[in-house]
Length: 408
Image (cartoon, rainbow, N blue to C red; front, side):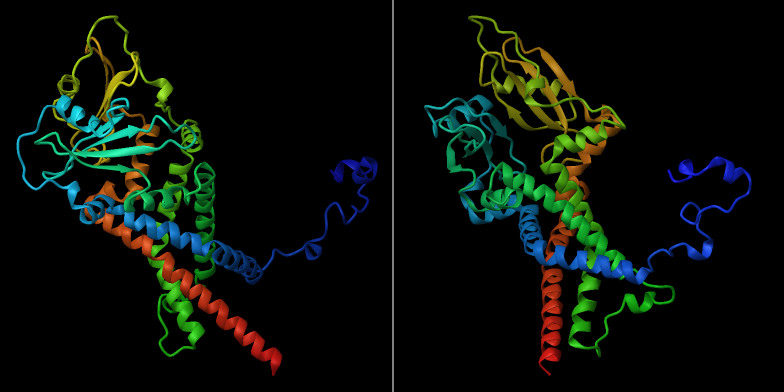
């Protein structure tokens, strides 16, 4: 430090201090005025919007479609909805019926239960010819009342699955997931800088919240841009934050663990069955009955079937008032030979950190607040399009005006 390099004798004797150590108040540099900061953030906002705006629009529009992905899929593919409602067949027959679509493959990895009266079971098969990092999945829809397969589709090759891959990874695999996660941070930067630029001076709030119909064409585009941004800012920030978590769950979980414990839930942490030679495995419907006995008020949503001799059944359930509506956060792991409950995860016993993480996906797709929440997220996903169009139009009009002035 400069003070430490000064002569202490001179300082104690009252000699004048060098200006470099303690400048006089009049010599100190004033902080940059707000106008200068606005110029800096205007450039940041402009370049982030121009460079990333198209991708913001792409990911947000695809996200809006995915809010009602199941409804869209059933509308585009009527075979996913059964025509007549009857008595459900045993789960073992449902699994056997699904396996007829892939007789040479292992049993389905996961079985998704129907969400409504006319919905079907969906059995997910892992293609044995594929390998990480790009594992191919096939989804077989099975009629609950007949155990007959209704469709057999490869994930990524039908509309809603294509939209999902485009939204999650831009069809680029793992590098695409990383890119989309970083893109979420740039969206936050764009929203934050836009709010800073909009923030009105004292006494100018009314003008900042109005649309001037008698203004210039640039002014009209600006007013439309700012008002659209204000309407969607909070929800877009929410989507960006939750989207970052979905792309980088381990990074976010590590940060959350600084404040509250979070139990490990990766595949390597799943409890294993105690292998018993010659002992038959329990049936899927028996595993469901055990899980329901563990949580009597819960509704089974999905089950993971054992693929190897040490694997266990895993049953996902949804208890009343759970945040996650389509999947639930309650889970039971069951020994495939003895039927013993190896572990039970009760959402009511989550730590603060686990509860926080459990909220993020339901917030991202809006299901945390039911149908109203889904519609809000859908509308929020539409706002980047007019923001991008008005921004491009303003930029082009200003460039054209500059060109005209130079030529005149």
